[in-house]
Length: 412
Image (cartoon, rainbow, N blue to C red; front, side):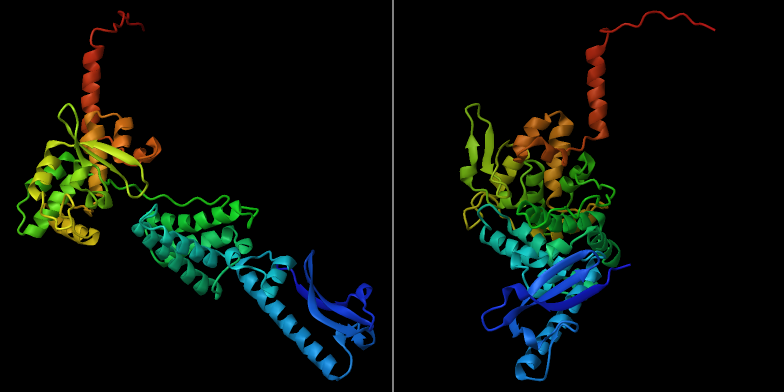
């Protein structure tokens, strides 16, 4: 049961001035918590009713002061009511802060998130990505809608966040909006990022995410098998737009480059080594990490096919990401692939089917993908059963006649 709120007013008699006036003070009590505040008014000691906590008489001074006290009392109760919708344990100090408007723009979740995005937007093209910004903005919009729908307020103080709020938000996304588990995890993680920043700045002393774990979804295969890749490579496509999309997608499958990095490639990024091998030398726009990729025969042929055709001087003719993904869905249908084919699957295919499954060490793959650590590469590393069979077969050859089992006599 929630603790009852009590508001009272009194005079600070020990600070009486030369005219006999004392500062009027307010006092908020909720359970065992208390919080005093100043009314910003003074009144003569002789005009104060200690029992009622009001000014005596009907003079203009007394009337104006009592009206002010009434408005404060109503505002305090209203703030307490709003906070109670979010948190079962509201302290007197939380109500005082909300009532006095002490909470700054950086002390509330939505405002803090908005300020973060303003700063993020200024760094687009330098060390931040446009697509990531879109995802963060989408998460903020969902958070706003949830707070407004659930609590009938526009923002929430960091100090009012608790485990129940996070669970309710998870339920809202997962059940109310029927989002997939991976999408829910992304939206909640964006909010969690703001909370972590707030903790590092001392705005919160206790992490409200303590004990929260996002429900995991069954991981879907994000790479193409050799059979699926062959189908796409050999499909008869009926127009030049689909052919271009296939070529750009295959370039990703055989280089591991992300969409933005492929789009940014110029002939200056193609370097011939002393041994005659052609390399792509670039840096990932998303992270700034350098990646050096030896060019296989297929991407080399794609480069030769489109050399000089892009009017802006880019290496390949690359359309919009959404346009490419739309065409890839058409290609998947033509190839009778029951897959939600997207451009980013090319990067996963390079990591899993083209490199790791063929015995390329994960350390080398990590460098080629432009990852700052191998832990990032692990998300792309899916070793196929064919690769395991080949590795085991090679192991058997190496171990043949190396170990001998002694004759074991049968016993009853």
